[in-house]
Structures are given as C-alpha cells and as structure tokens.
Figure 1 (tube, rainbow, N blue to C red):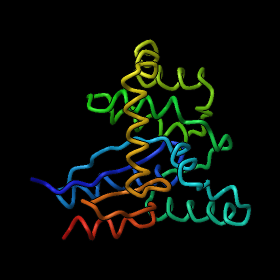
Figure 2 (cartoon, helix red, strand yellow):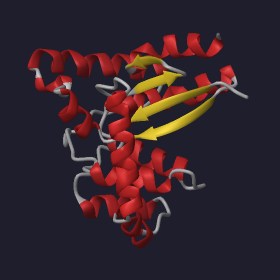
Figure 3 (cartoon, rainbow, N blue to C red):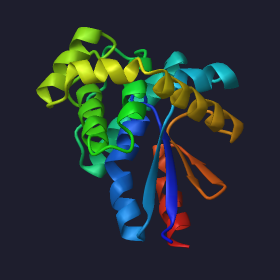
Length: 195
C-alpha cells in the first residue's frame, strides 16, 4: 500500500494555491497518494477562533511579500486577488461534489487559477458560471451539485473532522497522524513521505 498525504485546503487560501502547485510533484516523487480534503476555512476559523493573517495589517503586508517570494521560488504564476477574502462556500461545495469524479482535478485547477492567477472575483455567482463554462463545465450540473444535501453534509463533516484533528488553517497536511501546517512546510511533508 502506498503512503498517503491528506491535503486539507480551501480555494480562498493563497497558501493552499501555492501548496497545490507543488504537492503533486512531491507526492509523485515519494510514490505517495494525495487524499484531497476540501474544507470550509471560514468554518475552521469560526470553530478555532483563528483568522486570516491579512486581518493584522503588518502581518498581512509581510504575508503578501512572502507569498510572492514563494511563487517566484516555485516558478509559478501568482497575483494576489483584489477581491480577497471571498466567501468560498459555493466553491468548496463544488470541490466536494466533483470529488471522486474524473472532473475533480480539472475543477480544482480551474478554480485555483481563476482566483490566484487570473484575479477573478469568484465571490460573484455570475463570474463562477463564466469561469466554469469557459473550462467546459455544465453550469446546471454545478448548481445541482452545490445544492445537493449530501454534498453539503460531506463538506460540513470534513470541516468538523479537520477541527477535531487540530486543523486551524489552510493548507494542512496529514501523513498518518502527523500534522503539518502551511505551504512553507512542504519540505517537512516531503521528508515525512520519504520515511
């Protein structure tokens, strides 16, 4: 059985975007499988009393520069979204709904890049529809997925599980019971997978 890394993420987290650009390579090199765990970061913040670093002005200013440094180091495109923060409930329900299907990875790529490369305001439903339609998704199917009670419950359950396991932000990784937080800790993730 191959090693697994659980990836708890929310599209609204720029650090989750950066982690997403690197984790598939890290997992591939380790012969590991990624277990995708879409969660609602707003729900995690509410349950843990945490908040986005940008809510603290000096930390937010530093964080924007640090994210740009990592994007440069990774050689990936990233432009901070002026609509940040956005409510990602609909987007995360979409990820939960597509999870396990052949459309999931394409959906994740579409949403992450729309937010953190193309600077789309995905807090607006019409923009989400435009982005998904351009990527070949059926807006009617998407609406059905995000309104499906089982999908809603699964996202809620994953978010609650994350909190119970000690998650306080995104991205968070688990290799077995070992937790790592932050895209800037991917070296520890790689080391843990190599063991």
